[in-house]
Amino acid sequence: MARKLSLYEVEDGMILAEDVVDEVTGNVLMPKDSVLDFASKNRLENYHVHSVLIVDTNDEEKDSILMNAVLTESYNAIEEELVGIYEDLKSGKEIYFSEDDNKFEILSREAAEENDILSQLYLLKNKDDYTYNHGMGVGVLAAKLGGWLNLSANDIKKLSIAGTFHDIGKVKIDDSIVFKRGPLTDEEYEEIKKHPQHSYDIVKEYSDYDQDILDAIHHHHERLDGSGYPHGLKGDEISMFARIIGVCDVYHAIISNRVYKPKDSPFKAARILRESSFQHLDPYVVRVFLDNISRFYVGNKVLLSDGRKGTIVYIDQVDRDAPVVKVGEEFIDFKVRRDIKILEITI
Image (cartoon, rainbow, N blue to C red; front, side, top):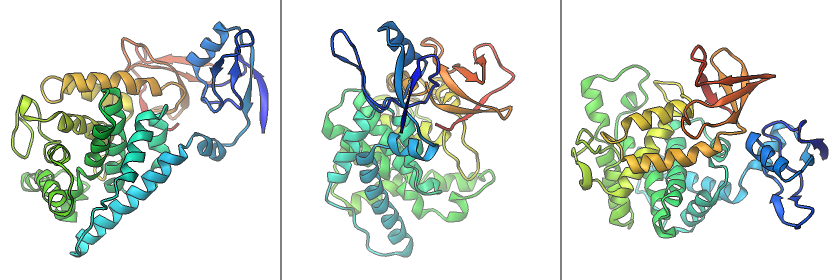
């Protein structure tokens, strides 16, 4: 089903039911299935487009349209392998890393080319388990960031593999520590800090993945100033792959529900990443990540701290952490309003 609406009637988040074509040149101005937002409507207005055909859907149908089917298929296949490896390690069985990299080739290619990676991350979550969601999420984000950094297809695939398996060593740490709801003791934190070494040992022993992947897994918690772990590496001692996984790991952890802490908004995650630049995280990698990920915020639904829901309609290119959100007929500029916060993006 579809309905024709004037641009003034179109709400952010609505989906085009057909290509919008320039009547003079015949060029496609905006393809079918594009999600409309404040910026895209302005662009169409500039081309004197007055009305568009909109998909008339409920939320479930909208999700199926937005879902990248190829990315989803490879994601599900890799997640199934990841769950099997975790379960086999827990039970003491011999484990097996598939030698078929085709799933990762598809995942990394689709993630790198995906036009709305933020929505895909929310739609792809199959299991209510941070362990699996986090590994898969970091793998997808790392592939996307590799694309933004103009890395080769092979390097992007390596990043997706490293991101997926970066925390697998937590299986060697007692569940009472990994899933503890309260603060860790000093002794428990020292145990947690062993997981990059455990992850490295597991992947090195049971796979034939190369040193780039192994280093990224081993060193994703190392920091530029030497304050990280497990080896306290500094500066150039930390590979570019490890720096990329480190940034994606921090960002995805903050926007995810963890056992000991509910998720925060991507805007808080961006502030934390920016504050960690130079001293802890690679400033260039952080800048490329934040400059690009912010492009996907417009059009997404948000939950505010006062209980209201709204839609992001504008991202300031200077201050990307303070968007403009439309709630009903009200526009809230978060550069000005400090009494309410964005709790989460809900797409």
